[in-house]
Image (tube, rainbow, N blue to C red; front, top):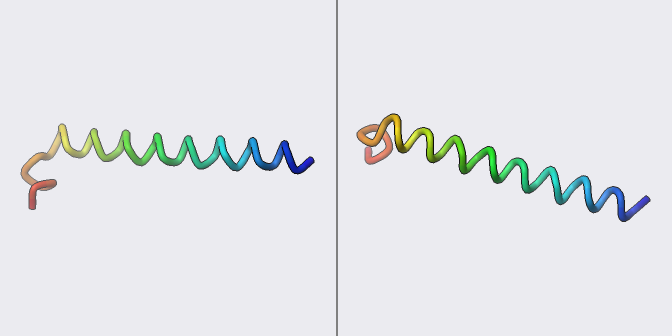
Length: 37
């Protein structure tokens, strides 16, 4: 049971990090002026 929880939490953290980086790169590419400010 603990192994399953570890796998789920690890996968959740990875997907959150991926989502944050995707949003960051999309924001950088669509609004460089706003990101620089």
